Length: 472
Image 1: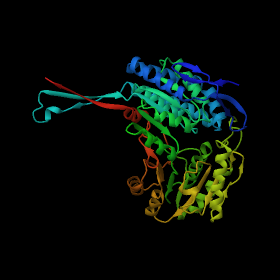
Image 2 (image 1 turned 60 degrees about the vertical axis):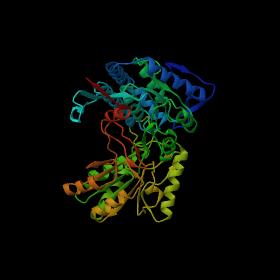
Image 3 (image 1 turned 90 degrees about the vertical axis):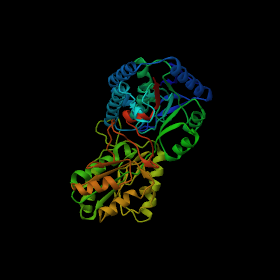
């Protein structure tokens, strides 16, 4: 049983304090991880600062290292996927897919390293400036702090680390406390790929403790965080004038109009609702279905859900594994029971056993129920009828969140209206709100966050635009 350390300035450091890493399906301890203290955080920032100031990498070198890391990652795909299946509890087929996506994220980041450019500024067009030339350059911000969640610990780490390195920054990396082993292997991969010491530093331990230490460290220039709105708001407050990118979740909604393919759409919504046991920021949580096809949609979604297999995440037949912890499953069960007590009906599922929660569909819900208006982050979704498309749009917008929304329709005017009126960072037509590719700008509005992920867009956020003016 391996005792994993902190990765600082290219070296692994084992601390006296450690915490257990648990197999979420069995409850067994599978490894230990060192816990960083204030001195370790300072050492990590020291290493990042020293590397940024003294070890310069040309864009092509960044490209080469990121590409090599992407190749090594795929060589270790099975090893990494098994780690994800154990420490997250996600089915192995989903874990394999996450590794493949993470490879693409690193490749996209590598390509951006060669594309960073400024622009000419036509100062000659201003009065008295005919003897001046001007252009902009994009400069790295410095030290980037990457704070990642448990649900996609590998790919979301690559979405922060890849662009940061591509832009020429150094990184202090804090993974979720319950899923640190994928972070350890990722750091090993970057070291094997030839990343200079100090460019990537790993600190592990309590989120609340390390979060405080990291935001108090004034040498960090940029924070990229994925997690809860409460923690994101605290980080934003503590960051002051320093820049942040926050992805804070959602209760993503989908609109199913009467002209959609109901059989295909019902299966897709259910599939998106239950991926990773519903623990996805853009998981399908609310589905607004036109009343004329409501019953057919419910029947098809229920039929598909009953066929899903719960079981050992390492089994390729498994569709749904455990939630991240029994505590989270109990919280979801409480929200479900509250909804049922107020009149909601369970169409499918509804049972919990420890951290295992049956895929569940609700009907007859009310907008102010926690299971509807809050982020469920569990394998539960609600089906709600509507009469007019304007009504459906109002339902979707009646939320503190605004990450992504899905719209299923074959009417161009309906699609255009939803695209213009839905208050979300992304509107996905004829696919679910859960759709994401790693090269698109991804992020939300309202309490879903600030900024955009996707290597091309993250690189822009992780660089500063500097103006250069020549007078002749």
